[in-house]
Length: 303
Image (cartoon, rainbow, N blue to C red; front, side, top):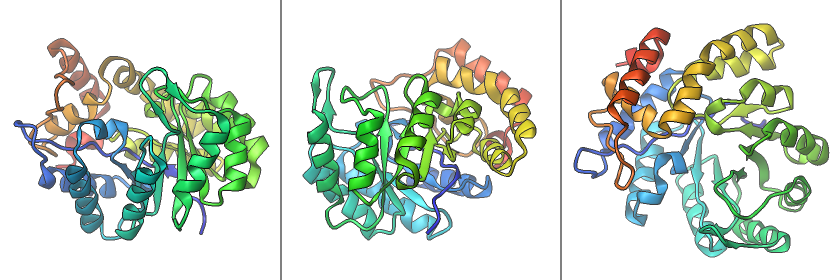
């Protein structure tokens, strides 16, 4: 099976105003992503507020996603946990329900609890035991456990399921380029993240896709497809046109931006995030909506 390329947006977890799950809203988000020609979708990630969900709610989101999409999009399920036993159980459950891939960060907890290279390698070997689907390793600043190019290469070569890596560290392009050289065909699925704020440099360095938010996945997917098809100038122009918008999302709003615009565009009924993640400051919200209206993205006109 060929590696997924293009855009794999992280779907937000939709809540009602009382912070209960809104599964109808969740389904509408998935339909929007299908119509926007996303190449895959990631659920239960940090941008999905996975840290605010109970295990029962995780199961509800997972089951709703798999049943509603019914094969229309490949699904990547984030199954991170400090314990490889629990991460493996989550991954097997995702596989059982039809997920194409699981994504995990290396084991860490808080600001000081991290593990060494050998323990990270053993962790991914244990998670992969009995697993048939692909694994994506998420390399993000949130983790206190470092992932060097050498370690990522070693994991990819010793754990056959590890075919993807999401690199969203500072100087991501430099790491992607080095990883592509070091791991080669052992790691064909190189992605960036951080809302695609460094997308063109990362594509130049060998990335094959981006894991963005759901704010402009239709446009980001086309940018990646154009770049990989050799239409570099067209891709650069389109990305540079979007860059102030995604920079505002990344630096001023975070995960709240997508929900605000989905509510503005009548995709969802509430843009609620779970406490202690509060609402956007009103002026910031107004600037985001104003900027979005100038760009006329699908998120505002899909519904």
